[in-house]
Amino acid sequence: MDQQPHDPSTAAADGKARVIAQAPGLRVVEYVLQPGDTLPWHHHSEVTDRFFCLAGRIEVALRVPERRLLLAPGESCAVAPGTVHRSANAAAGVSRYLLVQGVGRYDFITEG
Image (cartoon, rainbow, N blue to C red; front, side, top):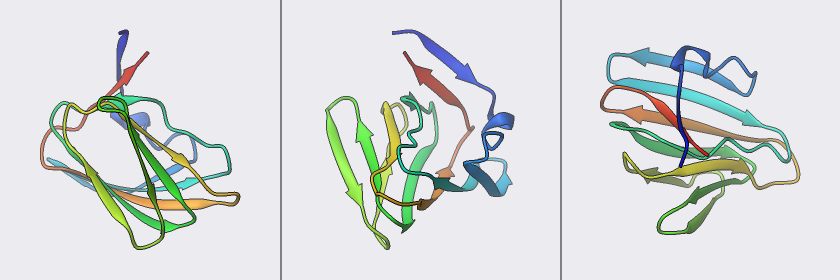
């Protein structure tokens, strides 16, 4: 598997994400996904991703064990450090979610 580290300072550069708060060991980001938008397969070394669906439908897919979670507004899930996952808009319209990442050093390691 080809692993590529991702520069966390560019995480919001694509217009899909807006960093709400960031401090040592903690990040809070709002994602706005258009129909068909998918974030790449990746994992984090230390932080847990906590997904909170705000609007639309968000799919959180795990690679091993293979699992797909479909979140509606008000629903949430957590992905542990080291777990390869991705998120996607699973609705016909715009979807939004809040991502809380912590506690630990943030990284974003893509999986080929």
